[in-house]
Length: 225
Image (cartoon, rainbow, N blue to C red; front, side, top):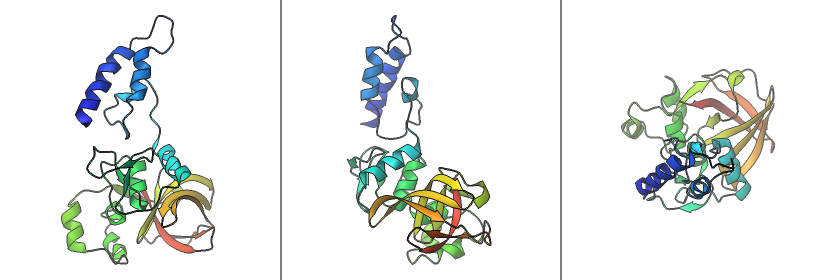
């Protein structure tokens, strides 16, 4: 299915690269828009005729639709239901699925996958997650690394915050100690705020912050590798 779709995209792209005499978008451009693949177009084929939304825009779409949290249900970048067997671009509607989707990763990774291998002490932190199995994790990920550890001072929109069992996408940095996040929780896809980030932490020891609901967390800052 995916290969056939991309054949159509490439065929129409070659047509729409030649603008109409009037300067208006030609019919092929409109056809290409209709053939938009529900994922990041890694080949770049779609970018020729219309802008591809960013991962942050896709994540905001999930939030606006308040997608139900599930570790077994899948959706495409626009939040439409997909089965796990469909072409790449289907992501679980859980916290790590949202981040995997926003980062344009080829599949839905787990929170443990996304933090694994970021630094020497990562496994010790992962052990706080009851689902973590060191041998299984090494076998699953090998030398692959999906993210890198960064300092809070360097954080920007599109990065993520991890704490054992959960991961959140940073959608905006609103002040020296305030962030807006998008994340999937048992209440569904939601927008939230983390405030009063503690300065006593560091990149490897983690940082502390307070949610709007007064819940305090210690988290680590990640950027897609």
